[in-house]
Length: 392
Image 1 (cartoon, rainbow, N blue to C red):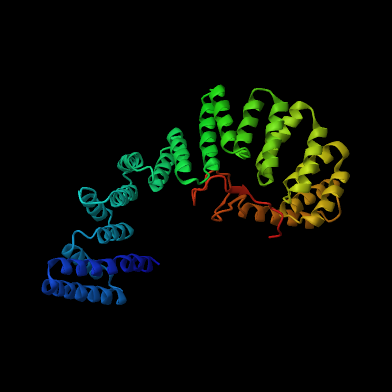
Image 2: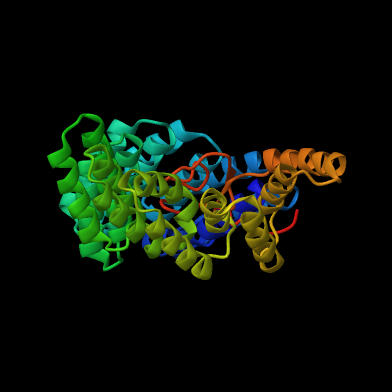
């Protein structure tokens, strides 16, 4: 795959290099031009032969020679720098692109392209401070350079500088028209968590208000709001926040339920909890609300009623976790098939241990714990609890 990627860059700049030789020939006279084109053509085909024989290192040297024959060919130089970076020769890419940036004969568009390439070199080498300087200068010079703003957002995420990440995401939205509300809301939630940890509740609430303004359906903001209200002893307000979050995106219901049910219990509103869980059972195909409601039925109506309810639900949504809960209830009733049920319980528990509890809806990354930013693809808000109703 790496070799195929290299071919893409080779075929991008080879015609440009050949064309540049032709232009030089025209500038220098017909006879000189014919000789120049002939040399370039010969080098071109030698390089192509190296590519066909899977000798990219030798091909690079020849194409460097082509670039030396026509130092003014901007596209050739940029393409070579990209190729060096892709091959891990970042120092060579930096030197090449630094030379381009220092040229005085570039157009504004070429200057922007060279600066972008140099900033990407710095990012690849881990020199985030230099990359930040380049992209910041570029964003100031040319407001039409959204790629610089995009890189700055990535840098500030890595540095966890959420205020600057928000500022550049807002500017990116203004320049491109691409909605950035969901990402900005996540950045505001990061600030809210930071303020909440520092016990600056007023600042945390302000950050949550901005998160809702950026993304009215932000589930994470609702969860943080619920925690703040719960910590303050405002259990009714916490319930409203958690319920709103669950209704915005029922896929996050398993993440919300433990705290929501704890606040229902503290508020002494178990009937409200049963009503909400019944509602969620209709809108969410996972097993989480069914199991929660089963526990409430068991506590209020007894084991037999809970077992009967769960057995009915599992006919429509078979689940390993549901099966494990049904086994527990059956064992509690003291049936004659106790040994068999114990074996089934053991197998079920093993299956549950092996399976991830969360998966990224964008790249498929599986995890045992929840992450607001996917560790694999770095997308925000895509790691969600699994439905856990399919039979393994």
